[in-house]
Amino acid sequence: MEIGDIVLDMYRIVGILGEGEFGKVYKVEGLKGKYKWKEFALKIAKDEYAIEYLWKEVQSLILLRHPNIISLISYLYKKDEKRLYVIYELMDTGNLKEYISHQSLSKELVLKIFADITNGLAFLHQMGYIHSDIKPDNVFGKKILKGLVWKLGDFGLLKTKKGQSLISVKGTVGYIAPEIFRNEIYPASDIFSMGALLHYILTKKDPFDVESDIPKLKRNKNCDYKISEDIPQKTREFIKMLLECDYNKRFQNAIELREYLKTHEIL
Image (cartoon, rainbow, N blue to C red):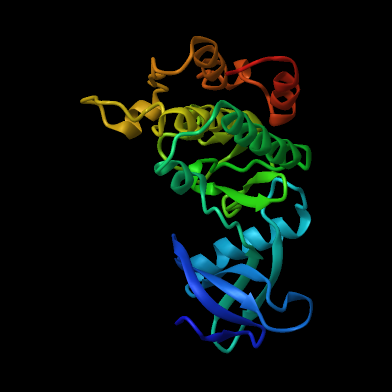
């Protein structure tokens, strides 16, 4: 696909937003009807694994409508091309990793990002889902009249049954809860990832990203993390709560976490 190409007779490619696991993510402009002049993001799945992954995300997003979850606009599988086209709302500030790579964040913005993602995750948990891949790359910002809103994206690894056995360990090293290495997953597993996410927002490093002779994967598996001393003490204690090695000692879901945030200062 090239800039200027017409896709699905409805959209024109106007730019490239980035490169994902399955190829480029395109910026497209609507050409007809209610989508005319509006801009969106486009992913195209071409091989069997990519199609299966994106199709799972599509099926999830059809059911998940929330202000802090990226919206699915449309999708189409073209049998003759063996391609799945998926159109999403455009998150114009990009992902969180890109956003904070070249700037420091105010206390207010850190709290806003964390609260927004907690709200989106609480909705997921309420609906019976587990995200299982929370990380800065899967958090996206969008400009609105009142500033920025942050949303959770990438639902290809979404799980629907707490405590279920996993066939294999999936996720991103540095954000994986220890029980996942034992092939178990719970809503509390996402809470662990939220702790690693908050650490990254504050330091631009996950809590396993330290100098060590022990491989990062092994340290993550053994829950051998280190919280940066540059983080304020009360925030360090809060992150420790989220990074509890025993999932029974964490918040059991993001609904509990959201309630905690209403009555406690974390930064």
